[in-house]
Amino acid sequence: MTRIHRPAVLLLSVFLVAASPPPEGLETDIALGGERASVLEGRAADDGETAWVYRYIAASAHVHVRHRADNGLTWGGQFDLMPAFISAADTLQRVEADGIYTPPRYERGDRTVHGVLAGRVGWHGEYVGIEGGFALPGRPGLWDSPVWLQPTGMVWAGDPDLVYAWARYLYGPTSLSTPLAGPVAGLGHSGPILRILAGVDPSLGWLGEAAVAVSPGIRMGAQVSRAYADPNDVAEADIRGLVRITVGHSQVDSQY
Image (cartoon, rainbow, N blue to C red; front, side, top):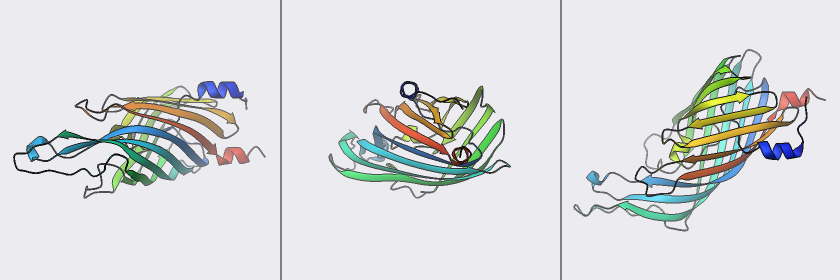
């Protein structure tokens, strides 16, 4: 296999790979990074309550393990941990008519810990693949929700060596940002040396991802993404950056 020199790795690793066809055998993804996200909590003005916009500065750690059998059947699990602190807590709207006031959940400087635990099964063929399962997302805006268990999954179709279409929900490194953690779709390429993805979310935010092979079975990359969580433009756009290493264990073992 062609080896990539270190300068080329640094140049090409401006993005990260996800929602792509997995190799046969066991694969482990590890991603580390950080983000700035704004989350709206509260109800509409007609409900006579206060809505708050919390601005988070967070670190992110992501581990994703999945196994693909010879027949294409795939299982996997994901765990994300996101410690954060509140950089600002601003009132978006306040209605005094009924004397209802919703105090803020957090104050500036408060520290929080969020995370996601997910499990999925699926099947991947030569030109199509799908995974689905359930996730327990401990994310902002969900603490008062009666339904914590949420669907998670991904689907792709096309020729990975050329170009394929993909879509995912609560899949891969998650985020405190609602649009970044929600549905995302786009196009990708997954060759023997370089993998690239580009996608958009419903807020018309974007992400770019890529990774390069640095040795047999090992890829390194990074991600840059930007989303728009607040339709009223009260908060700044959400941004996130990650670095990642992906290890295909069967490919590494086959070299020795």
